[in-house]
Image (cartoon, rainbow, N blue to C red; front, side):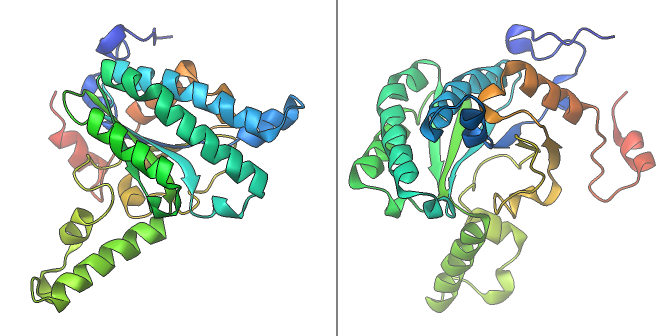
Length: 259
């Protein structure tokens, strides 16, 4: 069996760097179930999940992953019990305050996507401050999807394009896939290569709908607070073993692959 240990910033031994994803997204699922299993309040699961974020970000950096996008709070999560939502908002603000300088020191850029207008003014202000603080000299981009929904993202892009057409800045016939991508919240980021979902659920729950068009999916039974470096490594190895054809035949892909 091949040695698959992590080798610092060199990635995974025996796996060519070009076989690993540039952009990984994770649906952080299972915090509440983790807490229930341990007979703890739900917010304890979310706190444990926050601790895992740091480890996974570091593991992505070690493996040459350029962008890690985390589904932290969906537009549907407002429907959860008020006490849980309020606790999540306090936790979000606390993490933004605590982690800002650590992100800067470790050359990690923070980018928040989603409709942040529903958050408190304190949270919105802190988001902008941390994004500005980490916007230069970075090696990894950490994208936090907060109050985000894939349908919202596409609708927002369509609205922006419609407004440009109404102002005479754009012709309808010039609207193509590229134009839509340029108006999505992930504009400027590498295409999504790998989507991971923890806790055994096998759906994408309105996350990065457009961006998932050609991404690979990886589902694991592991609850998010238990998902660490080793679990991420297994997901990356699974991705590296797959052949991405993008509509071509296997023979075409193999012929185009350098020896």
